[in-house]
Image 1 (cartoon, rainbow, N blue to C red):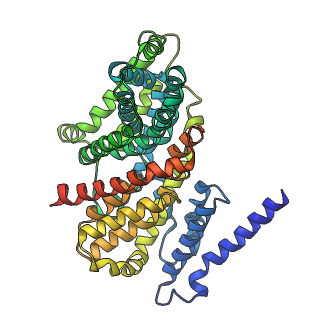
Image 2 (cartoon, rainbow, N blue to C red):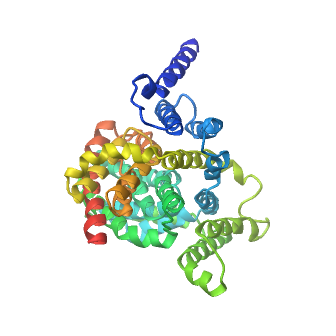
Image 3 (tube, rainbow, N blue to C red):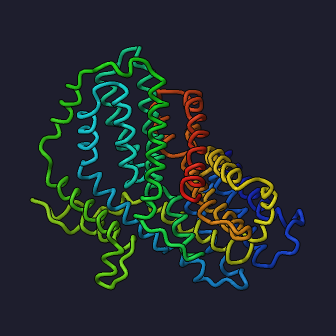
Length: 468
């Protein structure tokens, strides 16, 4: 206990020294007072995010702590980011996900998919990958992984217990984490970096990327990554095409009984919400209103509290708030606030000048480098923190060099989800690693190549297929 206290005190002292690094080393000459304060704040937040001596969501409140010391930045300019429209989009998404989970619909969809297509080991793998990716488009990748792991583990324990199935079992468990991360790329609510980019570009450059635009742009890419992943992972085990008896899957599916009222209502709400996202522009034009992705998400989430069930009032009740990851929403707001301060004080413009060294490379090479460095960084750091820090710098670099902002920010943000090697890289990686089905070496060996190929596919897709 004493050692932990001393360690915390040491880290706090070191955090203060880190905060003042640019002052001590005299590297902040020529910067304005506010720019110097932002550097101190950013260094402090990075240190605290990396060491986690306090919760990362608490670290995200530091911009509010610094607010009184700025000369030209108003308090409301800092705090408004904690209630960004994308915060409410995420909140609505979290509530919809909670209703979806409570209905048990995910289990029925997953087992039905396996029952229809899983008549061999490789088809079970493909079914798990695509089912997981589909759920991850609408739920958080963490929630998706937690939902799929028990289903897959049950299948493995009932059917694949022989020594020759050991590799297949490890690959199948690993595929859940990988598909959770890739599937989340397809929608703005799939991963936090996606939502960060949507909000940042809208608030700072007036670039609006709505739900359906994001999905249409990224879905072919996500599909390509999932196909590659399926081919790669199924090459790792033998007898992939050998037929298997599906009676154990059928028995599990039949145990669910007939589709429940909860599931029917969840299907209706999900279908309605997605339809509103798709036809939002036409609805706004016809009724002359300003429907947004966030308001649609909140509307969809409210239906889980309103639509009645037999014998009870609704699917979600008064304890709904207990399962909402409020810390993620605070982290999101704090990160946006930090990114905004980097932009509005002109600090991003100053720092981005250091990036001019990469101008010697072609645009395609720059995109590859950005995606690769991001992918490797997120193996050891939070992809959310990485996105908050580097997104302002990349956007300013693009503006200063007359480049399309989306050409640099899209591969960067998508690559932030491509961390497949280390258990600490993403929550899905940590969850499947905790199953004790494989060691780190196995994960690194398989994840490294997927990292590299994913970066190449993303870079080629954004550069060649969408902008040339």
